[in-house]
View 1 (cartoon, rainbow, N blue to C red):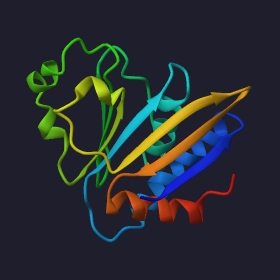
View 2 (cartoon, rainbow, N blue to C red):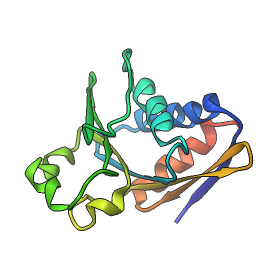
View 3 (cartoon, helix red, strand yellow):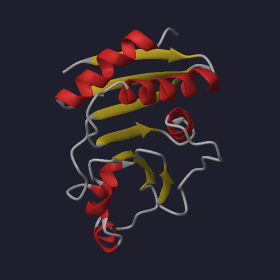
View 4 (cartoon, one colour):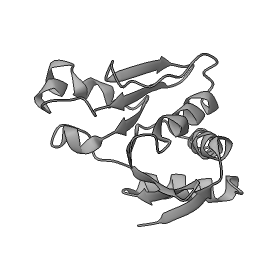
Length: 162
């Protein structure tokens, strides 16, 4: 499966990747769900990346971390975006109580931090994004996990110039 890797010099570069993902998604002619697993240490930029995506999809307001709420929803013109942070999840079964399967409809984009905490209950990822510290910068690796993920990565490679 296809991969991309970038060095991220600052917050703006991280936001640019998220915005690029939104642009790549919006170029598609069909509307299908997108599931993105986000991996990385605390503070690695997962929420910043998601902020770039949500704003790239047209959201004008604040984009905050779902650390305490587990999920932050964004209802946009043609899409619903859900940003999950499963870090504080004690048991994957908690996701059943919140109706996790309802979040994976064709008009939904789900960005899921700490996906291993929801093992067995989450939809399969289209993309797995790993963010890591490298000195004062960060490195981001995007790995396609589906044909859809490959299409998004191919389009992103044409959009992003970091």
